[in-house]
Length: 437
Image 1 (cartoon, rainbow, N blue to C red):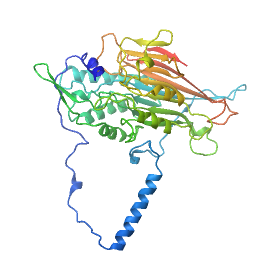
Image 2: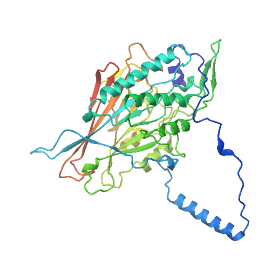
Image 3: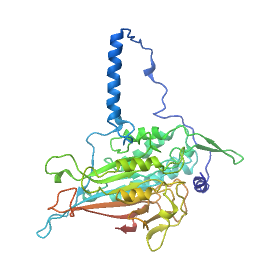
Image 4: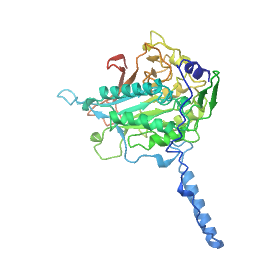
């Protein structure tokens, strides 16, 4: 797209990419295709019985599913793995029965791992990116009482423009960087416009030849979801994009007095804004899916939420205004081609903020003028991708707090108050661009 081209033209020194053909998901040495003898059933009574049983099973499965399921493949669900708020050090006092809980998210945006891997500066950029990620994880997770609860990889984890068969390998290398820094890390990811972009080969005369990506979004999802710490899910097949899913964050089990199922305190909405092999857009199918699945969990009060997508929704949603915005602002705004009114939908679902990346020179937050939703840019986290010598790398951090009044039931009542604040942790360890609501 024009937006992608504008940004990519600012990359320096791109040369033809390495063409390593190793990929754990493209192994053709599959022994499962050996010849097998078929069992043929000819008895009409047995055939009729089998047909009836199969038809009944299919009807039961179809009848039990909504139009937009949260997972395209039920085998990717995780059993007994929950995200939960943590109790803070604040305890009950003689004058207050309020207990506080927190949940901290780090957004790594636009890492662009694996860029220009056959040049001298490409691997150097990856090494610098790895140091940024590790340093931020160490800085934000050095206190047991203030640990990292979730990392959101908010798109453009890779620069697939420079990869042929080896995108899954580079993705595994990136995840290993994170796990080396924090072995018990929990994370989830959404796609950007470069993660499955067509490979670009620059010829001697300057012409760029585009080759369709040999690694798909589904293959990258499969690699990510294979890790124990991943909370990533594969989105419904009938919804635009592949990384559309909802992650509930539950109240801690120690305030669940009756051993009842966990109660959701927060919804994390992960949205695929396209790009790469898809149009850069938010689609009506995503809006319909959100309205059907972004529910209040059967309780009297709507569960608040926060949302992440890679590309900003619209110029009007993210335009920097000095009276409503604060933070790093040194880049143009390049939104999706069409956003289907996503911010209005998120507002109706009581979403408190929508966080994006994509524009590497932006790192600000704003109060949206027409809704209660705030919008935030994550900070450019990697040394891949276009940049400027004065743009420091970093990550935006979100801290969400819930105060539970001891006289109220969890999940309801005026005593359960969700507050959130945000800041940017830079690569040198400093904190800038604080924002709280």
